[in-house]
Length: 241
Image 1: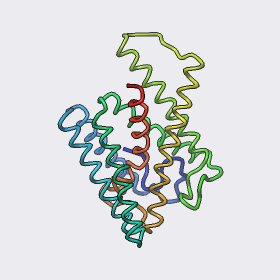
Image 2 (image 1 turned 45 degrees about the horizontal axis):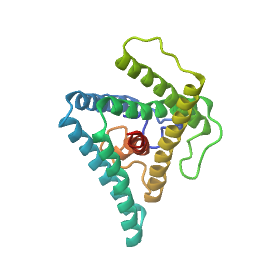
Image 3 (image 1 turned 90 degrees about the vertical axis):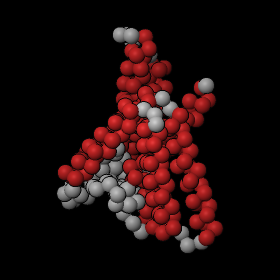
Image 4 (image 1 turned 135 degrees about the vertical axis):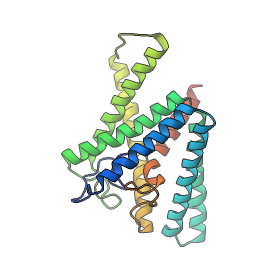
């Protein structure tokens, strides 16, 4: 569901020649989006089965990366146990969310990645952590904050229309500040998820988590930034109940 391939997302400036597989990437993205939308519209049990399939694929890819990245049995056990809890918990939260909230969460991550990609590519500038992901920039992170904030404002506006009907609702300064703060938190979380996978892939000596999705790598390459955002959404919604 995310633009780009492997580490070429979330504020990265693509290296020369990286767009040669753009057609297959776009086709794969279209297929993934169509399947996700179909599952969302079909509802249970198809939506739950779709989420479960993505969680299982992500978990398998994570475990294979850990096995390549570590040599110590203890380190492997700890990493796999922590990663399993991290990935499965996000999946459990997703299956508890209403379809509208799933759209809100997934849309936030897509907005972060899209804006970060174009800000990073257009503005360039200093890298965040070149030893982990050489192309991710501070400009890209700024773009992610802008994207997340814009998406959240749009989502809240249309959610309010669904609840109260047509409205001329605007946002007060305090509300705008809250939206931007939440957008910043989610943008940082999404990029932290990207960095975690980038670090693990570097330790494993691989470019992508797998080759299951033509032009995009693996499922973990597509869900790495989404997992922490889902966890934050789950914590926020749980605290508000």
